[in-house]
Image 1 (tube, rainbow, N blue to C red):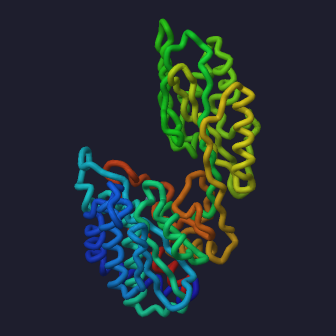
Image 2 (image 1 turned 180 degrees about the vertical axis):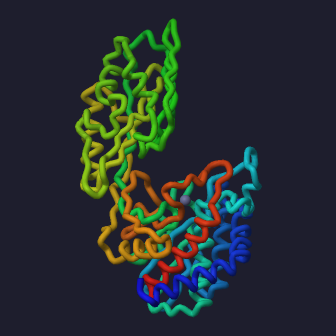
Image 3 (image 1 turned 120 degrees about the horizontal axis):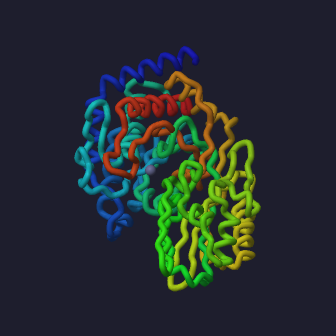
Length: 433
Ligand SMILES: [Zn+2]
């Protein structure tokens, strides 16, 4: 660490610690605004709450003296400096809904209890957004000279389709470097590509009355119930995110491995998706590379509907492959087994070089603030910057934390929130000084 960076890091720590009451008061203000998607209204494409949250973001930008723009309540941006900004920071002020049932604290407030801040949006993504705003304020009050511009972009629709960013991009270009505090530390620079596919065929086993499992394509099923003419069998597993099949125990492939009836379709599926295999090797996938690691392929849904057997597959593939190639292989394999593909969609992989000055600087900031070296991470999950060229996720949570994102008692520890403030302030200073 240079002497200049060391001094700034210390000054920032002191600044944030001495202003924490005000920072938490701002956090309480934005958490108080219920901003999940609601009925669209004239000029408010994601409803009243989302627009109100964006208005709050704008008012903060104005207080900081930034050049503030509202993109018809899809998103707002606030720019520092003359000329084209070099850095973009993309976060969102909408949240998933919350009902107070089951919460230990009110969901629409910031409650500090035992060193933990509770509230909907505290980790996703209002807490980190407040940290970014206060990072700017700290740099201003500490008179840190910035020679290059940056731009904060707040979206209002991350949780329900990301139409905010699709619209924003038609109006204003993203700066060449973009980070989002809507993922995980140290830096997520590699996001695998994705294929989501559903298929079906007329069920060819008269003994089966019903198969019922998960209906969410991006989740490993923890239950599969099979009703035979004279019997009923239920298979239990362990749920996991569709991009992390190795963390779960797939109840559908468990049933298929156990299946002893006469259905050629079910036997074919059992052969294609052996229980405990996570990379799709048997059907001709199983790809990996040094940057993204091993791909994943999971049969996540299996149900009967009006006499048809229907299924769903979640695939996350490495950065050296394409959507066309992977969807082609899986479609062909299903066709050979007698299934028709009903729907197929997905995304190409996303990658920013770990050797780029941008990623290297973020990793240096991580090391200096956290006191330990961090390595860039490849993810099967999709973040807010998946379709933004040059975009990486930088925080806001640490990989070992469970902050109940989207769940009851969503929270961020005061310690992690302090890290957010310090990481973002040091990052802006080093990338724009
Ligand atoms: Zn988020």
